[in-house]
Picture (cartoon, helix red, strand yellow):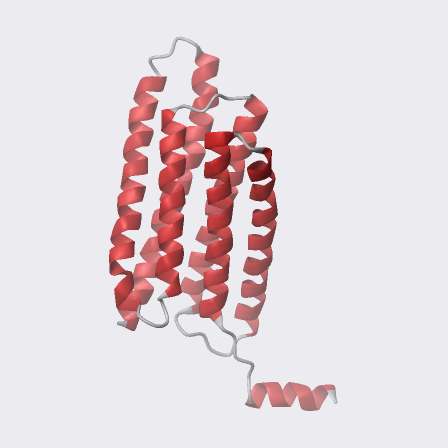
Length: 208
């Protein structure tokens, strides 16, 4: 019976909806990043908990995508790029969780640099989700989203540099180190967002 089933799978391989899986992962990622952004602004305990709840959900989706990617006979676009964009999105929320934990553990009062970078990261994550939602049906429509995401990324990097400049005027070295740790996590998230959108752009160029 097992043999027959295996032979059937080889002749008629299972089809996986990678467009939907990628979109679900992106939606879950946005929930993590948006929960972080809300918590940074309001310090609501529910938002704090939502970061971890949504991160676990995003991880489950990513693990399933990776398992299906191994089993899939064919993918709608290059499987390496599918894997790469999924991993980059996951690393963004790893950074987001690190931002949350660092602020909480160090009991930091968030400053304008952290607030601005967090808002831009949330905006970029939302734009990426909206871009992925039209990847299958109308990839050319996503070009404006790509431009907006890159603008968010560039703005985050400019705010990071400006924030560091102000931070290093501080006389307390411990304060500088504590805030720089959070800045660096947000800067890394911006870089990863840029990596993800670069892969997305390559995919759309080949599809149009």
